[in-house]
Each structure stands twice: as C-alpha cells, then as structure tokens.
Image (cartoon, rainbow, N blue to C red; front, top):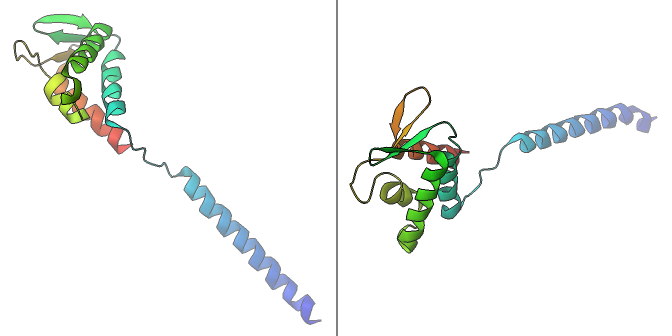
Length: 132
C-alpha cells in the first residue's frame, strides 16, 4: 500500500524535473555565445563591409570609386603598413580613414545621397561586430 501512495508523488516529481531540465537547456541553446574575433578577422570584416556596399561610392582625394576598388585599395594600404597595423582600431585610424598622401578624410556616398566619413562608418561596423 505504501508504494502505491508514493507513485503519484514520484510521477509528479519526475515530470517536474524533466520540464525544468528541458526549459533550462532551451534557454541555453537560444543564448548566443559571443565570438572572440582575431584582429585580422575584424579588419577583414571592416574591408568587406565596404566591399559589400555595391551601390555606394567611395571618395578618395576628390575622386569617387566603386566599392570593390575601395576595398582593394584598403587591402593594399594594409599590406604596405605591415606589422604597424596590429588592431582593427589602428587600421581604422591609420589606414582606412584618410589619404596618407593628402590627409583628406575618406568618405562613403550612399545611393540616397548621404555621405559619411569612412572613419565613422567603420567604427560603427566594428562596434556591431564586437557586440554580437
């Protein structure tokens, strides 16, 4: 008799445990783990952010270039800078923000006519990447 009396308690406990455990796992699976990107990955992400602006124009020293040319130019500048560019922030500040010849800031012109300095655009992209 005593075993039969405990059976409903055991069943309720088991169901409660299974539900609690499955909800805990479900919560963990939806939590997005923050990826720690290397500085090289961050820099390439920034360059690709410009390269993927298919309809935008990149202004360098008063001349407008398409996104692919702009990305190739930034890759070339980065390569020439070598080990002087260790972080994405240094890349933005020393390579991707202004002309090393004239000192004039690079700009991106979007299809809606809005222009933004490349430094601002890339800092926003870097912040997005680091917060995801």
